[in-house]
Image 1 (tube, protein in one colour):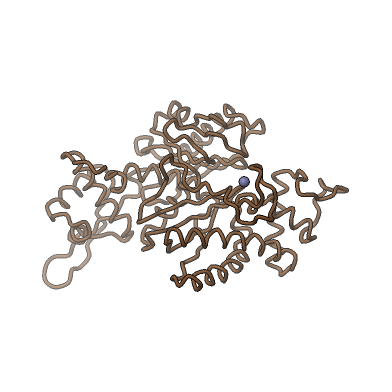
Image 2 (cartoon, rainbow, N blue to C red):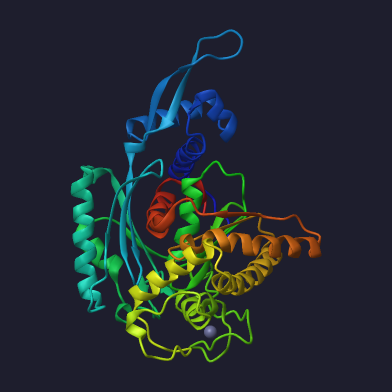
Length: 416
Ligand SMILES: [Zn+2]
């Protein structure tokens, strides 16, 4: 429900409005241009920008000549060093921590293998150590850090700040990492789902994009969807939007833990693609499977799956027909799901990313593009833009930090 706003709230909204237009104009704007963009009065822009300069969030960066008579206009930019946020990504195969500045640039990063024990207590220790190292390496003063964002596998209980039941990391069930990090660093800490973080990372890193309706297909050990709708992140009523893993895309596909066949998450699991590739002889048999039959459930170590998945991508790039067939089959399921999503939400851009995407992105994109173009043609709608995320492996950690920035500096959040 919309609520009335008192003066301090209006002041905060005006501040975030200025920060937001400057975020979308990396080269900077004059006060006159900011007034035009925000529809605030010249006097209000002058007062608000003064306050933001005093807080170290904006800086004057010189003059630009104006058209016609009059003195050159002073240009203002966001001061990248004005505020920082820490982002943590909990993934069952890697823990990533980044430090993001106000212009959404990663100024420091560190990665750790999760503890062998898979235990929540050991994980807290490791993350605490990683953040301490990150802060020391960056030299950023603690006063400038506005908070810590944690992205984790869903489902999450956002209110309690806890991971509910991560399928691939059972030791983290009920894991209160945000509370523990808050205790350790004295900074506000929030938890979000990794896919929501990913789409937010895209929004903060490419703020000049005109696309208002974006789906981020996040492909890691599983698959999920992050959404920006009408320019705002859609997290859902319990912050668990995008949990698409059990949508059936291939009724004749492999058995899923939920009891059905061909769930989207199961079909796209790198393990499944690796099994398919081994059965078709598209990639070499790893020593750990020597002498074993490759049935649908043969256990393979996580690191082996990872390296075989990369070999699969390389074989496809070299034109190996069996490798191409494996990726085309997964591509059909991916295109089917994405076409449904586009039709439901009238999306204008689909971004593909997450840890599993880069290894096979070249052929996957070639495989799905014509299928999605045909779906648009058949339904008489405009083809949508398909792009690979430019952020790479850090995307969920960058997104977790972006959430902290969003909460502190975005009018969308202040207006909520
Ligand atoms: Zn399922």
